[in-house]
Structure formats: C-alpha cells, structure tokens
Amino acid sequence: MRAAVVVVVTLSLVATAGCRRSADRRASSRAIAARDASAATPAAPIAPTGIRTVGARPAAGSVRAAQVTDAYAIVLPPRADLAAVERAMRAVATARGLDAEFRPMTVAEIGVTAQSMRYFARGFDDAETAALLAAPRALGVMVGGDATRVGDLVAGTAAVARAGGAAARGWIVDPNTRETFTRAAFDERRPEPLPQASTNMVVVDHVADDAGGLFLESAGLARFGLPELYLGGVPPWFPEAANEMFNAAAQELIERGALPRDTLTTPPWPENARALRDHGGTGRVTFDVTWSLGDEADDPDAEPMLELTLPGGPFAERISAARRAFFGLEADKLLSGDPAKLEAARARALVALAALAPRFARGVPDLEALHVKAPFTTDHGGIEWMWVEVRTWQGQRITGILSNQPDDIAALKEGAEVEVRQDELFDYVHQRADGTTAGGETNRILAGED
Image (cartoon, rainbow, N blue to C red; front, top):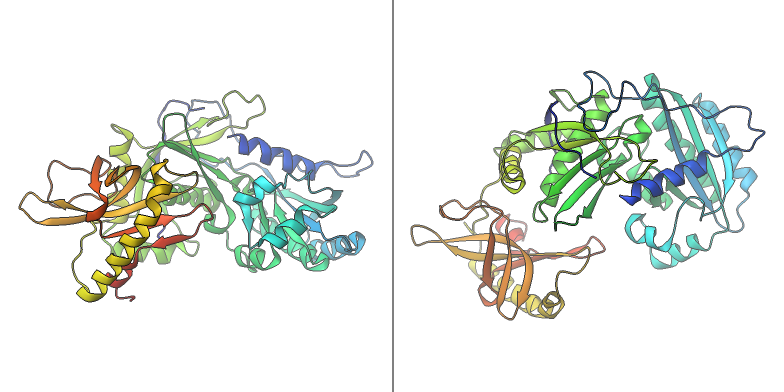
C-alpha cells in the first residue's frame, strides 16, 4: 500500500461535524487506569496544550499534551500465574525506567467482546478466539510520563506488554485501538525496536454516515499525547486514497506533535516517497484543520479532535483531484500482456462474477466492496478500460461509481455514476468482510507477475 510523503495543513475555519467506538475505547482505557484507593501514585495527567475550542483553528505550535500515558492488558489463560506475569512485566518496566501501574481485571472490563473481535482481532483463528473470550482474568498495565520522552515511553510500554504475553502464554489487548493480538501478531505489529509509525500504531476506522458516505477517525494517537483525527464526507468509492492521506497527517502528528509543512522521516514513509515520485505523484495534500467533536457532538465526555477537510468545491471533486495529484494515478488501461493468459483470466472472472451476482443483487453486503473492470468508448472511437465500484446489480445491469479518471472521454469524470453490463466486464476485485480479496488476475498479468 502506498503512503504519503508530505502533508501541508492550513489553519482555516471549517464547519464542525458531529463514533461511539471512541467512547468504548475511553471506557476501556479508564478501566485499565482505575486504581485501588490504596494506590500510592496517581496516574500521570493528560494536560492539553492550549485551548481546544470546537470550531476554532488550533494555535500555532505543538498540540501534544505535556504528560502522556500508554496502556495494554494481558488476557491470561486459566492456568496462568498472575503474580508471575506481573513480576515479569515489572522487571521490564524497571529496566526501562518506566513508572508502571498494574491492575487485575476481567476480559469484559477491557471491552473485548465477540463483536470487537470480529473487527479488531489480529492473528486469531476461531478456536483461539473462543479461548480468549472464555478466559477468566486479565492484567492491565498503564505507564505515564513526560511527553519529552514519549518515544521511549511508547516503546517501553509495548515491551512490558510483550513480556506479559510471553509469561502468561496469553493474548495482548491495546485499549487505544481496541485491537487484540496473538503474541505472533503483536510481534509483527509492535516489533522491537518499535517504529513510531502510524501504519502500525494507529487504526483508522471507516464508518458509514447518514448521507451514504464515510467518515474516517483515528485511534491510537492518544498514546502519543495527541488528539485523534477526523475526516468526514468521504465518498464510498475513495476509502483507500482517503485513508492513506489521512494516515500521513497522523504521521505528521506523531513525528512533530504538530501539522507543519514538512517531509516525513519515519520508515516506511521515505521509501514510499520514492515510489510516489516514480509514479508521477507529488505526495502532497493540503488540509484545513479545526478542533471538532467529530461524530460525537452529543457526547458530554467526548474529547476534542482535529477535523481535516479539503478546501474547494464539492467533496467528491476535491478528493478526486487530491488523489490524482497525490498518487500520480493514471486511467487503468489494458496496454499489454499475453493475450491467451488475459482471455483465460477474463473467462475465470466472468464465471466468478456470475456466482457473485445473487449476493450483490440484494445490495452491497456490510463490510464488503466489489470493483469491476468495464469498457468505455473514448471520444476517438477506442476503448478505455476502467474500474467501477458496484452500487447496484440487477440482471446484466450494474450501476456504480467510476474509480478512474478517463484519458479520452471529456464528458466523463472520476466519481461519476455509470452503468455497465455484466457480460462486457473484463475483471473484478471482491473485498470480503474478513479483509481478504478475490479476483484481479488481469492486473497481475499486466504487471508481469503471472
């Protein structure tokens, strides 16, 4: 997946928008932070810098809190020795000079449910999910400290959690992102040494709004003492592009505690910069930013976040233009490839599409997406093959949103609603609810991978 290089953020007034998942995360983090009355040391407070007035632009300079906290919870199998697990975690905390607090708790207290596992489980199969949900105990750890050593604190807290997972032979929950990890998945997403990168430390939620679009909301910036980010009004045919530009803004915050005009330096961002330039992209996007309550305007406990918007006209056109400039994307055309392989791949795609037709005739299933490659007649009588995100499918007629910018069709633009026929299609990509995909064989052939 490509990622951004530079994010340019202007500070101008924008309208305030109005996720219950954030409230769930706050409850989970507070459960870990709760202490017995006899606890000797209070939690390190999170004191925001400046005034966070909803609807106002942030003051120049850092938006990072003066004090930061991070937390994890270890879910223990039935026979695990809780005292031994805590000793192992305390040893790592002491070695790293961390002020760590521990609290025994239940899986329910940290907010792990069958529903949350559906979306935020990392590395689990059905049997291991059942074992975790049946586990009787957990051990929470919270670490607080000064924001000037936030990198050491975040990396150290992850190391403490890793030691607890190994000692318990159990599982690790991140209340900031609501992710639940097997030990192998935690090592993959929170490796040692730990990159301070949004790509592995932040989750971006994509949530359907009441207008048929999406809003994006970050989870995980709070552990760096930072406000979370919000981007509303995203057309449903641009989630990936919006996600990557959004992730770049999150990386700006992590690296600098602010949203300046600058270049990202944390891997894998510099490597991705070269890929973007090779593809003709600028890696730059300009956002307006204000304090906002995002989708939680009616929640009295909601914490202000930074809302990002793209300046200009209609949002679909703005994000389409930003996407083309950012990534340097061109219309997806069939230029070359082994004709026999391409035709065989197309035949397989049409068979698979016929099997999918009844499923999508009832509407697009939750958490799924289907893109089809269809032919469009150019202004000079040729054929331009482009991707369409399916919205409705009745018989041979498929309506959807054009996902490419045409090269030679003046009357058609990326983001337009179009109609295509099932029997004329060339390929498809089916994004399933579990995150896996099917199709796309012709792309691999054209890229020389097949």
